[in-house]
Structures are given as structure tokens and as C-alpha cells.
Image 1 (cartoon, rainbow, N blue to C red):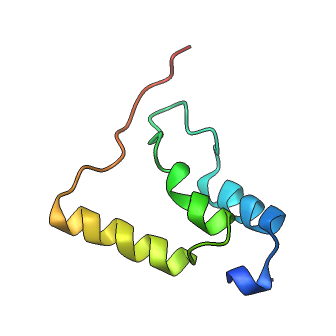
Image 2: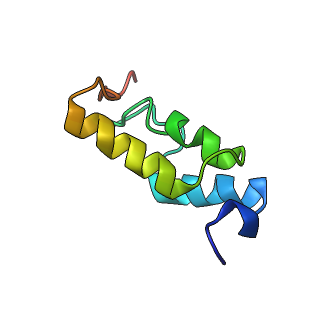
Length: 74
């Protein structure tokens, strides 16, 4: 199975992201709450994973604000 938008359905892209992140809810154990959200454009067929990764890396290098970590609320 490929990862390109043209090679996958929306459901397959959701599964790819879910499996890659593990906890798609990103609400527990130090997960970054904005991390799952940054893949919405991929899931919705707007941006390839490569584009999202490049944008993430550019923000990291430039020092822009990144998703923060948080602990479990339980």
C-alpha cells in the first residue's frame, strides 16, 4: 500500500495516521495535543505527508511555537 493521496482513500489515510501516532486522541501520557491535528490536511487529501513534515521541520528550525506536551488528566 502506498501513502500518497492518489494511492489511498480517506479511511486508509486515517488508519495510516492513527497507526503512526499510536494514540490518535493525543490526550494522555505527555502526547502533543496538536500533533494529531497537523495531519488533518493529509487525511482530507489536501497535503501529502512529505509537505506536512517539511512544514513541521521548518517551524522547528525557525523556533515557531510547536504543539506542547501535557499529562494525563485522569
